Structures are given as structure tokens and as C-alpha cells.
Length: 497
Image (cartoon, rainbow, N blue to C red):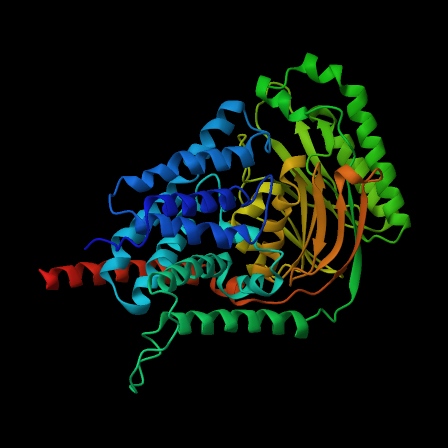
């Protein structure tokens, strides 16, 4: 059964153009949350309208150009990777669009509208286990839509992805039926189920109502603790030394400036303590420590924590001679000066020796945890923090000018999912502190601030969430739905024959 062709090729090219332009504003260099809702509407229209199966392949170069424009120069990747990645990232979306094109015309009513969202979430969830995580998920762009973002506390970001894709499918169903929104005639109790528009509107209103009520009725009434995040500018990229196996002679060339950065970080940390901060941490790898000087640094950091009576979490890049491993770490010190834990970044493009365990510590200011930058793009990995009852998550990070503030937002969504506050201190990006509802408590732009010391009064109590308890239940339900729809399609086709 072929999809019904409803417009000429010229109009279809227009729909493709609109969808492509909107796609260029999903995440990364330019992130417009509304674009994530607009792009699939018109891309779906283009795919469904074309009778020949190969015609939709025209979307390949268009989406490549759109994503290349958005991504080029936005991330610290080799040029060849920046050229190849935009060709790979749109492929799962194109596959899902083809799946919808193949299955939805063979189903009726609400079932036809569920093919695209079920297939999209299935693909989105699978991609979350790749080295890219959920970096390119449309749901990761929705933090600023606060009421919708609250759905993550129940479904994780998968419920948001489902809603966006379902919206595109519903709009196309209405479009194909001449924008006739009338309910089907009849008095039987199931007629509402056969009107997918009514079901979608009811579901969307329920999500918005839940989000509104959660924001309005669950402001944290707990006490707060002052958290300070600190960033000191680096004159060069010290991670580049790992690419050449950290030769001693190269490290020695920069030893004076490395020690100068460390001194400046401790000076700013002292100011933070004097301003009342009880929890102090640094941006990702902001302290650069030569391996043979690590013990001396630990002693200095412990003395600082004890002298000021603070929980102190310096984030360091440890340079070990002759090694290419990324010793990108957070060291947590207690007010007694003891080293409570060391956490090494787990999700990294560079080789690591991380044990993959999110560490926590019980304090008078709630349960503290720490993870680093890219770790927060993996919801299944960060669920450890929710299961451990985390109240405040400290996130040292390092971004780039062109992906701010977007790359901070997925980290804040993890806080909504897990029911904890997130403080993300960023080198070359946008630092944000937000509570467990995603309500912003403090914000600072690296490129618009000379004194990069951010304070935030953060609730010491988080909350438990459905997602924190049940995990990716909604993603698995979507996968089951997708399998059921495939089975239903096969059954209907067999019966038709």
C-alpha cells in the first residue's frame, strides 16, 4: 500500500526546505527549542508525500548541509571528524522517517500516528548507548520549555522525545485529512480512541498540567547551602599533551604557568570561602597537576578544606609522563581535610581508567555527588546518582564558545530526571546552577565575565522521582509499542492478501 501523494514536487521541496532549515537550529551552535518541534513536521510531510521510495533520499545532502553549518567549529574535534559526523548523525532520523513511510499507511486511527514516535524513541534510546550518548536527541534541547521538561522526572527524556515525534505525526495526519478536527460519528465508548487528535491533545494537556503543578507546588522548602564554582582561564590546551604521550620536556616548558594557575585557583577558592561558600569546586581540569606533584597537591587541598571548614572538590587534569590516558578527575575533601573520594571522568573521547562508579558523600548539606562534563549526556549512567539519593550534583565541565549555553542544558535535565540540584561550572561555556525542577538559581557566561567565580544558594534536599526509581521504563514501553505496531502491520498485510 503506497502513501497518498497530496501535493506536487514543488511544494514538497518547500516542506523539505523548511524542515532542513529548522533542523539546523536543533542544538549545538544555534539551539532553538521550537525547531525540534518544527523540523520533523515538515520532514515527515516530505517523506510521506513522495511516491517513489528513492525521492526522499534528497533529504540526505540537505540535512548534511544543515548540520554541518550548525556544527562546524562548534566542538574541539579534528576537521575530518567535523566533516564526517554531520553525514552520520542524520541517518537514524532518515531511517525512522522511512519506517513511518512504510508502516503508517497500513495502519488506521491512532495506531498510524504512533509509528513515528515509537520508532523515534526506540532509535533515540539505542543511540544513547553509543559514544555520542544523547547529545543529538531532540529532547536534550527542551530544557527551557520548563513545563514540558518536568515530564523527564517520570519518563526520562524519552517521554519528551515521544511527545515531539507524536506531535509531528498528528499534524501530518490532520494535514492529510484536510485539517478536519471533528470527532468520528457514533456513540460507542471507543470512539475517542479512534480520534488520535483528541488523544494527543489530552496527553499533551496532561503533561503540561503535571509540569505546571510540579513547578508551582514543589519549590524546595529545605535550607540552602552556598556553593561556589571557580574557573581560571588556561593559556593553552593542556589536553593536547596527551596526544603526544605527555613527554616530560614538553610538560616542563609549561611548569611555571601550570603552578601559577594552581595558585590563582586557591586564591579564588579562599575568596569563595570568605564569602560563605561551604562547598567549593573547580571547572573541568582547571587545576593541571604534574603526576610527581600529586601528593603535594592533595596535601595542599586537604589543608585548605580543613582551614576553611568546607567541602572542597578541585577538578584536575593529572599529567603523567609517557601516558596518553585522560586522568581527568574530581577530588572530594571533607572539612576535616580528608580525601573522601576521587572520581575519574568516565565518558570521554580520550582513553580512561575510570571504574564507572559515581561517588557520593553524606554531608550536613545533603548527599553530594560529582560527575564530569560529557558524563551528563548519558542518562542511564547518571541514574546511579538518583539511586544513591543524591541531593546536589557538582559538574566540572569544559565546553566551547559555539556550543554554549546548549551543552549545559542536558546536564540540568539529568537533575530533573534524578530529583537533584545540578551546579555545572564550565570553562569556556555557560555555568548554571539549577534545582531539581530545573529552576535556574545562578548563571554565568565565561565570555562575558572577567571574575569567573559563581555563587549559588542551593537546596540541601532533593526529591525522589519515578524515573530515578524505575529508570528507562518509558523507553522500553516505546520499544514494545514499536514491535507491536510492526506485528500489527504484518498481520493486516497477511489478512489483506
